[in-house]
Amino acid sequence: MQPFRVGVIGATGMVGQRFVTLMENHPWFQLTAVAASPRSAGRRYEDAVAGRWAMETPIPVMAKDLIVLNAEADIEKIAGMVDFVFSAVDMKKDQIKALEEAYAKAECPVVSNNSAHRWTPDVPMVIPEINADHIAVIDHQRKRLGTARGFIAVKSNCSIQSYVPALTPLLGCGIEKILVCTYQAISGAGKTFETWPEMVDNLIPYIGGEEEKSEQEPLKVWGHMENGVIVNADKPSITAQCLRVPVSNGHTAAVFVTFANKPTMDEMKAAWANYAGRAQELNLPSAPKQFLHYFEEDNRPQAKLDRNLEGGMAVSIGRLRPDTQYDYKFVSLSHNTLRGAAGGGVLLAELLCAEGYITHRE
Ligand SMILES: NC(=O)c1ccc[n+]([C@@H]2O[C@H](COP(=O)([O-])OP(=O)(O)OC[C@H]3O[C@@H](n4cnc5c(N)ncnc54)[C@H](OP(=O)(O)O)[C@@H]3O)[C@@H](O)[C@H]2O)c1
Image (cartoon, rainbow, N blue to C red):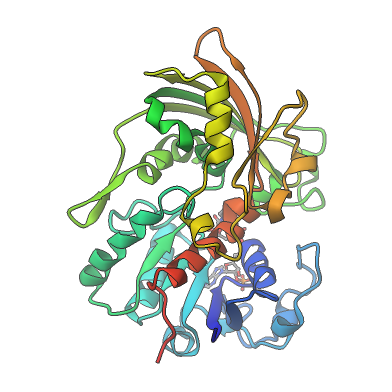
């Protein structure tokens, strides 16, 4: 297959570096453009990230000599060089909204890691194993934008990817209410223990905006398309507390759940074992073979042991047991910068290519 040419805007940042890294040896994608702020524009990529390369692997060779373009000033130029872009810029929300829309209007599809467009009603917020069908709303979005190719698709917040995958196969039992506490890694704030030494031997009981996202975003993911927009699900009710913990990577969720039609624990484990989504059906390159893994051991899942399961794209579940207030409680874990951020973005882009929404530009 002829590779899709890919640009990364915000390529010098933490999430952008992860996108660049994931393009190395990708079977479908070829990195052809990197862009960032005027501070980095005009420099070789290797020079622009010098002293702040945060990945475990070295800077990919194919990226080193690319000249960083200006993400705002060079839109037309970038749109002409690529088949689509990943967006990982850190700017004010209104600026990100305008920037991503400008790329879409320049007929360049945008697969975004940012939250700016998550609540735009005709922008799909997709976890490919769960709500791949939402991408059909792109036809309506294109009509609004007046585009033939260009559109915006987003991934959800990283926190919900630790528990929404585990709950989705159980929706048929009529989930009534969910209580969730998330224990979130420092990389979710773009930090390491070197850059955030205060987090060593510490816990911070506040992550700005995270509890609202954790309570509301699942309802869009579990929503449906109607009259050209995504309509949120009206239940279950969700309450969340989100804590920052001294873990480098991996968000863990402690989940309590009550059903209208309470399943047995064996039925829940079977639902997890048998669950597969569109990403598995299409055999997308970044899709885990087994999306949900249940561990019988009492001390699993553990962030350090289990976050990298299936390349960091699978979700681990454990400790399912009855609860005294809710029907059941369990624990689940996902890698926040792989499944929860850039890896989830790459999987979404693969879905959009496989389903014909991203095409090769003439
Ligand atoms: N870190 C995570 O795990 C995570 C998880 C989920 C979502 N997010 C979201 O993802 C986005 C990126 O996060 P990050 O942690 O990667 O941020 P970051 O490390 O601060 O990187 C920000 C990127 O945006 C670019 N940028 C900043 N101002 C710009 C401007 N005016 N025009 C063009 N580019 C500009 C920067 O370019 P320069 O290098 O030239 O300044 C850099 O490439 C943010 O919206 C963040 O909220 C992050």
